[in-house]
Length: 358
Length: 115
Ligand code: SF4
Ligand code: SF4
Image (cartoon, rainbow over the protein chains, first blue to last red):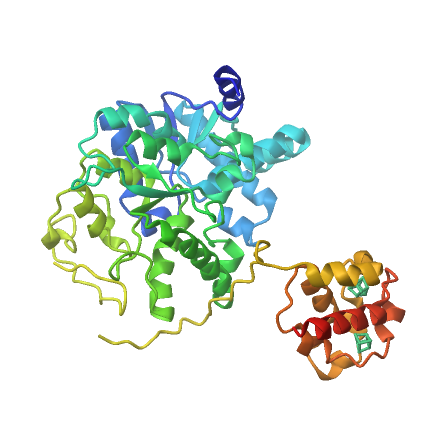
């Protein structure tokens, strides 16, 4: 195929991402799972890229988990989301960034619904007004936070203190990228690269010096699935999905996994621990797991942020082997210290997965 | 180190992925040539629901047909021997699959190959 033709086709797989003035909606679960990630995002956007970002204190959950587990009806969800948009409008913004993939998918679904069913939009306006006296406008530009980091990946690379490269050999690290299903599988044209060639994380990995691992189950779901996880007895489905991915990627000996969803890093990380305890199986070398990161954590590492400021100490699969491989300095003594320097105590070591204490 | 494995209240399910590079469609092709009505099966499970043998065993004709179609022949001989050839399923099948003849064909071919 001619290069021009290729470029023309690739254009169709791009999405428009606003360049500045963002309204940021956080995730309701990410700050528990990966507590440094959203902070890293706001820091990168404001301090490194000099962008205008409005971090609202007033927004709520998008109700996505409740919606997908059939606890919250769609009408309620739409009204809650309308309120978030109303907050955006009130703050004087029209570019909306969702930190969460579930929210991003849900906002997309709702905006599409309103587009095709204007009467539903009117109903939502009515519900919101009756409930809160608020009015709202639909964002001009809706992006997921990973779209923003993707857009500025080269600017981040230009400021990088570290690259995703083995400091001993100079070889690029082998990176598994995992895209949240609700990012591009529901509305393919709303994600960079669509459902066929999701490029949002691959673009970051390539810009920061790593090499993407193309393994058979690359596009398999991580196993989060709200219904699978919400009920304890069903969690076997969830862990089995993750296991399938680990089995498929392990022969390629990846150095790390990068994800862009709240659930994927949580499950790819924590299930490695659960699998090690249930089956005695670990997927990295020498009893290590494969460390799992959010894209903000990786951007932060590349920019030279302190690993403990990024919250890497709460990962179940220790990040230390990767930090050592890249040559990122860290103080093991500070691993379990709070922001005020107070010792928070150390967790119990797992039985099989290698654990790094001070 | 405590080597005891932990139980969390759920289990890891066995992977049931079918590798089509490894699966053999030899049996299916032979059965299909002798009893083409196997192609009509839509895996509705009516046969299995009405099956007399299924009352006393875990036999499922729907599953058996699916396995043959997917080239999974391991353990089929033992499976097929659970059928008592009463023909009840044939009366129930909404697609007109000649189930009894099909089961006999599967059985005969398995016996020939010794699988
Ligand atoms: S012929 Fe076999 S499969 Fe059909 S109903 Fe009778 S026992 Fe069941
Ligand atoms: S009843 Fe007929 S169509 Fe349905 S599964 Fe059995 S053989 Fe197939």
